[in-house]
Image (cartoon, rainbow, N blue to C red; front, side, top):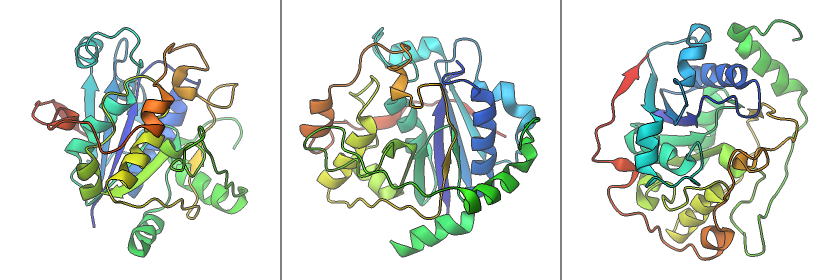
Length: 271
């Protein structure tokens, strides 16, 4: 069983302490999954990975894609209101190129569960110095000491698809499901509702949804507001996706093939 994780970000310190959050996220992902695809989208100067590489416990399973501001502008049709870190396009680039039997679309601020716990799911269905090399001990501690949270969510009337608060932080499906729904809806290049949308698309294509609360995974707080809202809350992005288009009106995918820029050769490095 091969498991891939797709993680995206932009080197803009969104939410604060981005380097620290990303280091914990990527180290735990590198440890848990066979393949980790990191897509750096539209970073103003250079990829986030170059700032944290010395603190990563690399073992040759991390694929690093860089979409520069110039290319990002072209891919979003030079739309100045497109999300600065355009999640749907960045995620699809990674999902389309992932080679795992199961693919997880996730975020840069998640401490990932242990490998054996993820396999079980699939089979069923420190104050002061930040010691990045001790992320595993941190995960063991919070496994035991964190209080379980089961927050259901509806983004609006008619939303029977989010089912869990912040559903886009961690979405796991077999590769054939991602292929059948053609990833995230590429029309939704603005913030908000794309994560709920992809879950509704899954249902519309005949697949099921399930919220799983065990094993635990841990979201690292970002920003004083306590939520990101795709940059809307912080004023980074001004325009959001239309919630009726994303949640109510979505039926089968409207993505054409090749989605995820599948016929476009995009260079990457393996580290």
